[in-house]
Length: 282
Ligand SMILES: [Zn+2]
Image (cartoon, rainbow, N blue to C red; front, side):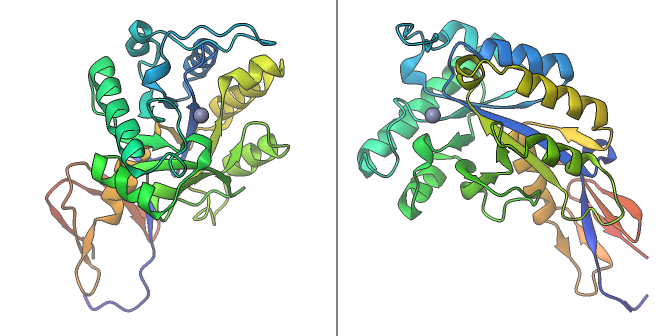
């Protein structure tokens, strides 16, 4: 059939969810234990960005415990979540020099992969510092995404995963307003694809406001019937597979060259695109 109108395809996440929600927490401080317990209780998932050079470091001389989690608890504690790199010693990617940054990155990746028993493919920039050359080093090291500390107050998917900006930090005054706006369904939700919140678990301890994350996780659990709760790398893999779909010139045939099933919505109908197969849409 000859195509007559413009094609508008929408990404549909696994289990036919139209939106995705993820958390990203840095530094692997002992308060991750309480954060993970809260997330698990509400079925919320996320990514923990760790410094393997600091595991087991004790630092409880300040106003609250700033000690790091132990290496031997990493695998069990973060089960069901993603472990990502945050540099061996939390050195600034742009200030430490390229060769030192390469060492910080690769050594950390090797440590985390050995400890976690799986590939580590995600990263968060220490201090939020990055430039073109740090991105290139990360890409060469096998990192596919890197989170910045910039926030968008929006729900779009990132165009460049090595500059992945969050929707907001958990301390944002608009946090719950954004959560409500995100969960509210409307017919034109194409710009509501991803709600991404970042922070550090020690902030809840230091500011004595654990209810912030408790309320957010509960809210998302209670109102997220159309939301996929995913880790950062799961979102990266799915969105990348979606973006790699190959269309025929008229757009009626779609080939999925990747290894995972991708779902799209066109004209209100959902199409399942299995790996290495072509689907024809009439
Ligand atoms: Zn950090």
